[in-house]
Structures are given as structure tokens and as C-alpha cells.
Image 1 (cartoon, rainbow, N blue to C red):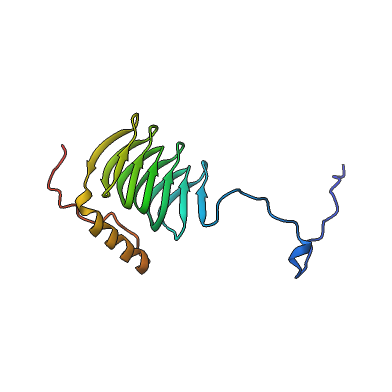
Image 2: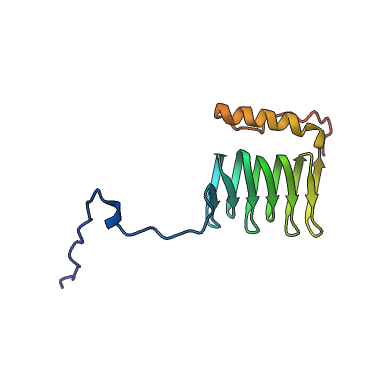
Length: 165
């Protein structure tokens, strides 16, 4: 029994972009990246633009001059350094922001918050520490590491001699 296969469709080779079909619009503002719900990343993320996370991320995230949003469907286990950080989903780690950290009502956060301005909306669950005194130094170190191309922030000591048993 013969299988009917369609004839090959030739790929249009052209130097004229106007003849190609346009890509679909994603409705993301210029300078913004969105990591979707089904995306799983283990490692380091560095960016020079705003970042929205809806998927699962484990590692380090360094976006020193821009905003990071952890969406409702996100599961993040990471150290994050950003200009502003808004969390709506699940996150654990060390979170540093030069301007503001905001935990929205659906946030479930475990870890340390380092920023001079922290807002926890009623309904958010937070277990950890808040240290505004280290914000300036932590941001300076994060920006330096970003410029050097090595965003690993997990080796930082916290000057915290407390232990949990």
C-alpha cells in the first residue's frame, strides 16, 4: 500500500524581508522577557531587561537594573537580584532589590529579603528575615558581578550566626 505524501514545499529564499510572513505579536513591551509556565530552568539567568517568570527556576537570577516578577504559577528556588522584585507565586531563596520588594496576596515566600523598601500585602505568606541595612552593599556586589559576568550570589555570607535545628 502506497502512502500519499504531499509534495515538498520549497522554502522561500529571499533577501527581501517584506516578502516573508510577519511573526505573531506577543504583546510584550519592548525590553521584557517572559518565561512561560512549562519552562524549567536550572542554572543562572542574567538579563539587561525586565523579566517575568511563570515557570520553574532553580539557581541564580541577576537583573540589577530592571524588574523581576515571579508570577502566580511560578515555582522559584533562587537567589534574585533586581531593581524591583514582585512575587505572586512560590519562591524560596535570598531576594535583593535596590528599590523595592513586593509580596502580593498570593505569594508564598521563604528566605531573606534585602531591600530598603519591602511591602507585604495581606494574604501573602512569608517566613524568613528582612534586612534593609545590607541593601546598598548587596546591590553593589550584585551589580559588580553582573558586569563581570558572574552572577552567583549564593556564596555571600549573611553575617548571621543563627542556626536552625
